[in-house]
Image 1 (tube, one colour):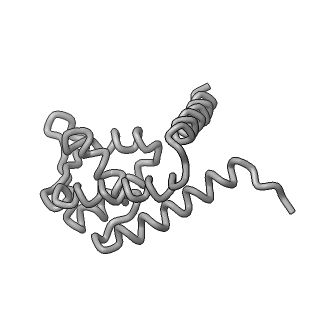
Image 2: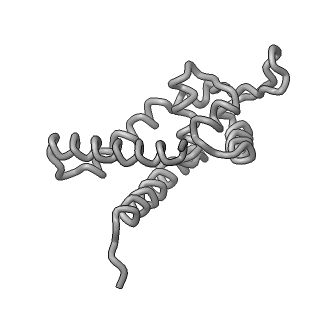
Length: 144
């Protein structure tokens, strides 16, 4: 029987978070990936280019196009060509997306609380530092 390593636990946690988030977002016809786009757009003042989304999420152009297209069909974002750079497609939150902002923030808090239940503040801080170090290691490996 194979030993369950760190990668196994990280993947399992990611899978469980995705299933829970997708279930919670289903009533809004959103997925976890789409909710991440909404949160990022909100952090950036409500709009960004599709290229910025590709770079920030480290995904391909077709992936972002698919996510944004479904979100636009569901009324969460609107898109247009940037008049200054015709090849650049802009993405902006709609009032419908802004209306569920508080609910999404609450859902994220609930997920975090559930995930960290039983851990002390010191343990949570240590976990954050360790995971940050793992992320930096992987980012540095990708760049070099």
